[in-house]
Image 1: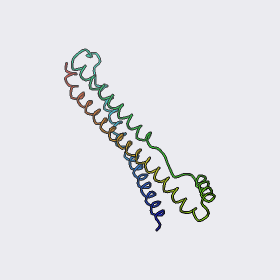
Image 2: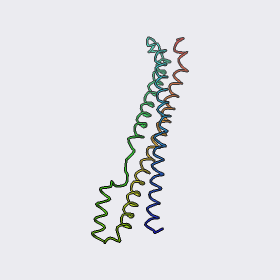
Image 3: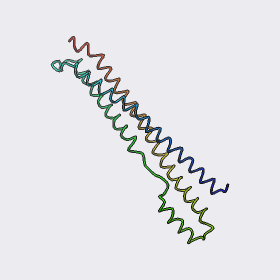
Image 4: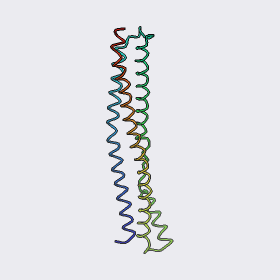
Amino acid sequence: MSPNELRFDHFRQIFLNERTRREAIRGSIGTPVAAISFSVFSLGNLVTRFDVSRLGEPVSLFIVAMACAGVLAMLGAVYHVVMVEWLFIHHEPPPMAGLVEAENAIRAERGEEAVIPGLMDLMAASYAIAFEQYLWGNTVSARSRTRALRLVLLSLVFLAIGFLALPFHQKG
């Protein structure tokens, strides 16, 4: 195998590996989304049990504060879930028309014998660029997915604390 072929195969393989990782990140976003829907259900349950007529009492204000903190954390989680997909940059090797144009340019500039190595260099470079952009997008998206999950858990903690205070609110 020539150095051009080795370079081409290497960059193609790492590009395809990163594309597979991207799909795994996309597939794993379901966990934070399911947790967000559970948080919304929990918030609705807390609100239905809350007695608005006792809003001035300290326990009631505490429950409202916990619910508001839970909503803010949940909204932050929703933002990060959206950013997981938003930050994916779709870069593929150049389209066929671009390759044909590059092939003609190489043929005109260097001659017929330079076409295959020149195209392999071009494809290796395009895979390298796409790999770097996939790597960056995947790293940022994985961080957003993790932040979303952490914010959902924080939201659930705030709502759970609100539920723990609910019996004191109801007894007055």
